[in-house]
Length: 469
Ligand code: ADP
Image 1 (spheres, rainbow, N blue to C red):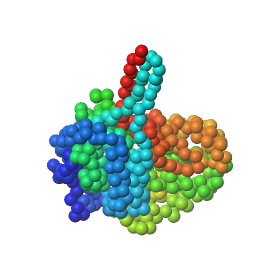
Image 2 (image 1 turned 120 degrees about the vertical axis):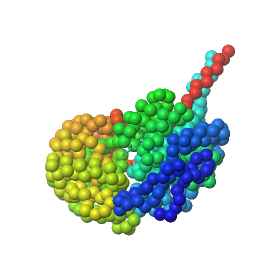
Image 3 (image 1 turned 135 degrees about the vertical axis):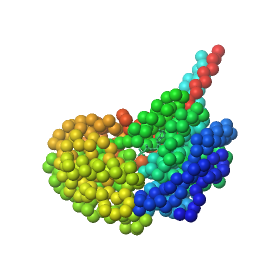
Image 4 (image 1 turned 135 degrees about the horizontal axis):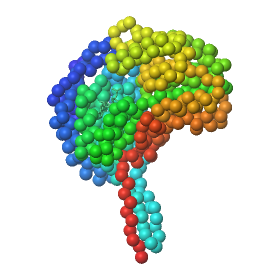
């Protein structure tokens, strides 16, 4: 690729002190070079964000909102360009890449509708007490490689609307779309308000420990989330952590087999299963088990796997070699401990391709059931008593999302409430919207993203208490 990508530091598009290759996961070959920031450039980015903070935080929220809306418009205008680059570096099919890019504008517009208000807590003859909310300062936004853009917008939009400044650090295998976003931001926001750096997985600790970073907004694995939280401890920094999940789909006896299997399948395979809230295990009643498994296998065999650039592709490659190798190991576990009825072997071609795989007759103790696979391998588990299925679902250390499927909505809703997750969808999957707070239970996260609650996470409440009389 000819394009010369740059970091954005203090309003300037600059070369990295180093560079690094970016791999197209559909070929396994390098297709572009990315700038790579040094520790010195990281410090410059934080310094620029700190210097930009006073003026940006004092601007009326209406002005910040207007600039955010300009960014939303630019994302819409340039969505085809962003989507093509996203498919190249991330691997997802073009239509899903386009959906992600337009989703960024949707998030920015949705968050823009919120406001930050002070509230009067008490006002009488003894005292007047007002709670104000003010921005925090420099926010470090650290993002993963599965949805490099939209997960960034979940952080960027509320951080900027609330009056914070940003240092953005994408994952090392998907830096380019964030760097392109930096180019767009350079033309919209004042100098230093948005900074974008890229690393080779070596600057995360320095960024999270930096004394001038007030808050860390992180999406990634639970293991890395733990490191982020301990880095934050030194300065009692604010954190929001959106971490792993092992989301269960619970199919009730009155669910329609064909329709539910199709929706569960889509919820497991979208983005090649590389979604924190992808369906990662499905619990099916005894009497429906064979028919449900057969339907899932039929859908898996029909699915078109290939390069995200090819128009017919429904399932793209795994984003990076490390994740691909982890999934190859989980395929071996699935073959050994269960009964694989579709897929089961990596594709014998260049790139990191795992076909949609359905595994039945597998015990709860198998690694593919216990751990987050983050790939297109779906274990199907049998149950005879729904309360026992709920118990098995809740044994997980994770609690991000879950789905419940059944014709009696009242019953499905009652069952949904028994599942220990931040979001539980009934008869649908992954309805994430800017007005709905998204959170993780247990080791799936801390704090909220999106919604008013998500915006409030980018502010500090101050209570001013005035004597009367
Ligand atoms: P994976 O394990 O799938 O590669 P991670 O959760 O480690 O994903 O990565 C998510 C993001 O966290 C990436 O941007 C990565 O560079 C960053 N990161 C990795 N290590 C650290 C760390 N110690 N502190 C902060 N961020 C980190």
